[in-house]
Length: 332
Image (cartoon, rainbow, N blue to C red; front, side, top):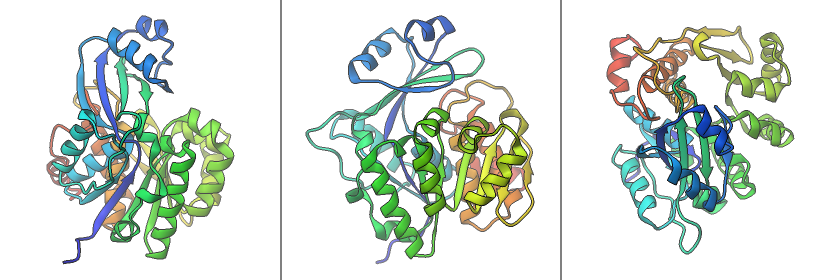
């Protein structure tokens, strides 16, 4: 029996998130840039983890968070990511599959352990991340199931993983499979530091393979080397068929190659607690809408609604049904 079609497949880091409250002094003491993300080795990860306040341990990773939000919207998702054959890896797989997500990537045997991200959240809701990739960075072309890609309306790539050379080869294989099947490829830039380090490679990859590009304002400024939204829009049209730029409390804009910029209003959360996963949730709503052929305004509004729910509590995955919230808002 043929497997049913998928709305979106996410390809990204399979990471277990550890979230805890912190202050600026803690970040300074451990050399963690506020609001940013740094990669560390296992020893440094253990040192920072041991010094953190008691927190929550949940399955995470940017693309996996997006697929979890997609599932909450009622979408059908898949995930490609690498975990180890260890306790954290088994927990990650179990939690994602419990949401109805297809996740069949073989675990890594005999290598580094499952990746983890230490997320210290300050009172201003900024999240500062220290990531030990472990097995997560070892996604390879062999992990890409072209048949799975062909069943998905959109295959979605996480910018954090782009820095790993073998993973970049996996991205290209998946993009070629999507194109051959008449489907779309999407990329989120993930972090402005990644964009700065990989600028030339990203420009080439996006221009050759990407149909939908997602970025926050800082990432867009880094990629397009301008802080002028008019210049960003012009350069975005030249590079990609559709670009989405999130603007924090100002909402977001969608820049189609052949049309006017579409402004998406923000959805104010009942309270702002933790911005972890806001971009992941926005991507889920937008890509779900695009996969279902919604117009840009409606798809972007789904993204704003999903982001609003996620930033109203600790953690990067929804605590309320996004499908119910979207239905109440008249978006589904």
